Image 1 (cartoon, rainbow, N blue to C red):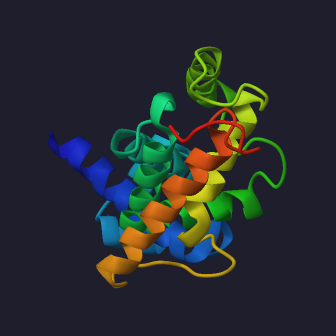
Image 2 (cartoon, one colour):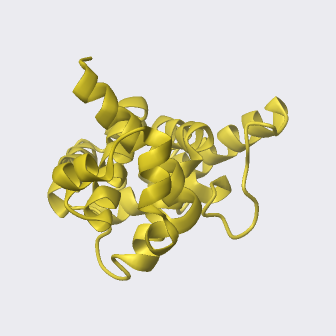
Length: 197
């Protein structure tokens, strides 16, 4: 990584912390610049505005989650558990997405539909082979699995898990999440008609 790339990496990482804590309106460019050791002139030359920097930070954080929690349509329970672990390890992604929903995109798709298409197509293929209940729209399956994985995330209305929670609690939540996803999306399971996978 050259010096310029290292500066941009610092900028994105520093801005992620600032935006996660304060949102777009509350984030301060002066703080981001000082903490990242990147001049405001360079920051604006690269990203144009604070809002554009936020969008770049969110895209960077999402790309990082895709690397650690790839969608495996043939194993939705495993995908949900990987998302649980990713949200636990990187809680600022959920906070950034929440700020994006509050301040940038209050309705409709939060992320580009084009970015989600390959995942939805993978789910549709798994539905066609009988691995996932075909009675449910693939896009809805994708949205519900993500929501289920966020049950204990910083976006939770009931309880937000942290790395400080006992390992046994995490193990129980992972097992519960996997069982719930398996039950919800395996053909015949929702009505109790089929055998467990």
